[in-house]
Amino acid sequence: MMDYISERKEPSPACWDHPNALEIPELFARWKQCQVELETWQMRLTAIRAAIMQRMEASGATELPCAPFLATITRRASYALEALTPLLELLPEEELTAAGAYTPAHQQTITVTATWNVTKLKPFSKRGAAIQAVIEAARIEGGPQLRIQERTAASDTAGHDG
Image (cartoon, rainbow, N blue to C red; front, side, top):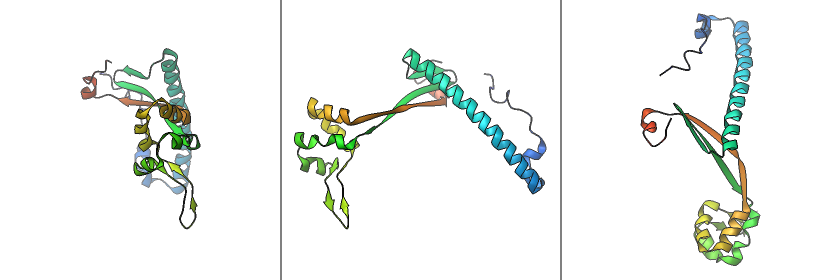
């Protein structure tokens, strides 16, 4: 297999490997140079990730194996918690509270507003379409996240073709 990283690595001067041998002004100059190069590489990585994601989304793919890598698009969701309030008419508040899915407003030293724990609330969606509809209506879809990982021989045999 081609070592794709080492073939692109530029030779590094010995002084880069031993910064303690440099004077302070030279250290700052090298730091600034590295910052500029890092920004350039980050822009390149962002453009590459965007191109991969765009091609995956255009083909409707959420997973793209390409030896030795595997790119996966995931989406994180959040919930508009105030949109979950109708669940209080569909489910007993005591049960939601006992399950840890809901905390009603209450007095402490200060007034604590009602909160929802969607992770603990999700099992209630099995109780009917109305409950599931309220939970889904509160869902706020996040932007896509692209994860690229280098696959090992073990993961290659786990059902992904390269």
